[in-house]
Image (cartoon, rainbow, N blue to C red; front, side, top):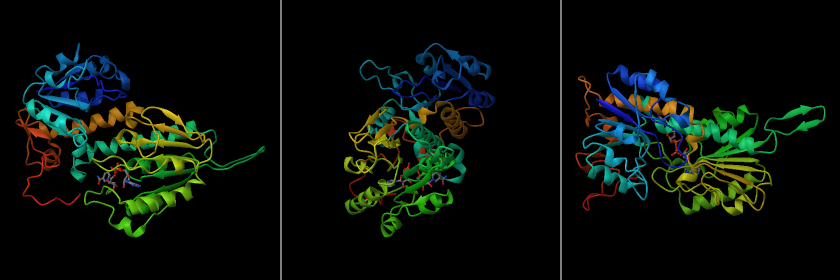
Length: 393
Ligand code: NAD
């Protein structure tokens, strides 16, 4: 069975879908791994390291994808728009494609996978159950993104973070606010604490309070009653109503007057990220404050944030936009993501080392988008007119 690893060609991407370590694991499973030359460059994995681990280095994407049974990707394949390469066209019918395919955001691409006869699987849809923990790419990537955002915000800040008592005077500890205390937010809190800041955090989900406090940060509650029903059965946040948002803006504007750095990580799966900081709220921050918006790729939590740009507002606030936050720490992000993929791949390899898409496996079933020419994932299939509206979960 042939596994293909190609260079990621989408803007702002530096990660790669295999590391020398996972190539070794795949070769150990008896798989033939073809790596496009330079695929690991952004993450500093040299061709020679892949080769030493057992991969064959090939000259281009076409050679890697040619006849491959499994294609491992970071981002969704290019579909040949404009002058783009058409990676999908280079894949053989029946091949399995596994990656962070953003299916809810790009349903037309999913239709294209079905049309091409590809069995596409989205790592974002791997359920967060115990057996799938090693495959949880959302967590492995968000954790690093939160860490890097806290460091980058600190580096852009013109002051120190810890309190320091020096002969020349005392430096006050910086005050950091983390908005959205999921995986990325909790790591941002832990990192800012380690840097010596006084940390505050907020989230719509009631469960976040205890997690925030266990890290030694202060939780800012917006509406305790609304928070009780803000979490879906899957553990994600619901989109909150206008009343909640108005109250959140009020509470946060008051808090912002005493904050130096804000790290925004709030996401709602499949939806535009909620705006948590409006232009008016940014004006409550003192000049020299820094805001890091990890959610910018999903529309942004901060009004005026721009992908991969640092914008300075009229009030002197720096807003750092992360088009692809995990790609800012490409080595570790690739190492962990490659391990997530290799754990998932083990589910697709049968005893005879062939490809087997076992739809009775709940992990494979949840991640599977397309099979045998059809879109099979209920999260994407159009609802039948007779079916009742499903509860948001
Ligand atoms: P996410 O990336 O979807 O969102 C980030 C955070 O933003 C979440 O905490 C969310 O509640 C928050 N948010 C959304 N809208 C908001 C708003 N308007 N204001 C403030 N905050 C807002 O979330 P995630 O990091 O993927 O985590 C989602 C859940 O999954 C959490 O409950 C987490 O503990 C859980 N989780 C479970 C496992 C597991 O069991 N294996 C693994 C990882 C995460």
